[in-house]
Image 1 (cartoon, one colour):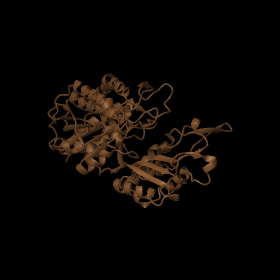
Image 2 (image 1 turned 135 degrees about the vertical axis):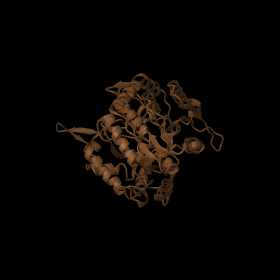
Image 3 (image 1 turned 45 degrees about the vertical axis):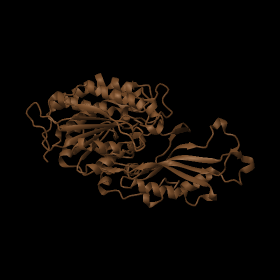
Image 4 (image 1 turned 180 degrees about the horizontal axis):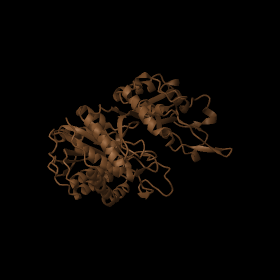
Length: 498
């Protein structure tokens, strides 16, 4: 397929201007309202259906899209039930037919569709927000919109429609466009595959996927995500007693559940280095990804690790900061994208410090998040992890690992010439710099599903989660200038699809 003619500089300037107006006048006010709604993902709100927050943000977004009156666009909320007759989290589906340009440029003749993806469910509040900020209290400060979910990933549906509106306003030819906005991504997208299967005939032959749920290495250029890690998660519990016992009476005789927990985790991780020990959790890094990591390291340098909010303490009048696992930018990039890592994201069995008496606790439970390299099969890893942790428990303690499932990672397909040139031109027009490539350490389950379902599609996986944007943590923000430029870049890439 041959690439379409790029937009002129006048067209790209007008496109960015239109997008900027959309963000200022229509998107930012709506995102503020979105942030105010605690639409937590089902994993963090068991009563999501009764509470109605997910339904509320989905309906608001649908109403907003309809109010834009994009010529030819149709939209519906799709609802399915699971095998037990229970409601699945709903999705928004929209579609727009291909269109010729006002200058006589014909619509793309391939018949392929562009699929635009986003999600509206959110991570929980977390703690540690600045005193003048809050997860459900939107605030703009220094060009950043603070609040839970704005950057991850509430802006996506609004940016997608703004990109389409900008093309329509300039009379630019574009291919058929479909959109899929889910409400279960932060819970692993466990409801999404049935919707993809149900909608597959309407998705059409997808030639380009645009996923606006990823990150950026900086705020100076367009960043294309080339890989995503997978994940295996669950709760590891070690129990030695049926109730707490006076530590003076029992310690030394009754083994500590915490010490046993340490022993069990030592099977999985080298605590001195953080390296995962079993080979099953590792894969060989493709040579192309290593070369891309070197190129990205040359752009970002020390910012690869300096961008995190490191703890520090004063010593002799100078600040001493906590250190990363490596100060080599290339190794740092590979560590967070192609190597498995273990995180403990929650704990149970511990009283609050103010209520912690001299009691030997009956059990210790940790919630584990194991990030897997993109090419490691998650279901196999989950099985291996459960066996590794549960078998041959020290002191015959009761050790259980209750899995919360897993998601296989993703490695992007080879970039075709038209897509590469479109990215170059779009980044230059929107940011004044060429595009960069970067792997991401997070997981977007949909990408692996789509790569399997549409193996020839190009994948524009990008997003606004740049340095210090802190999705999932406190003080999450959306960098507004970067977001509007990304929206314009997306529009330009769509216009270039053959």
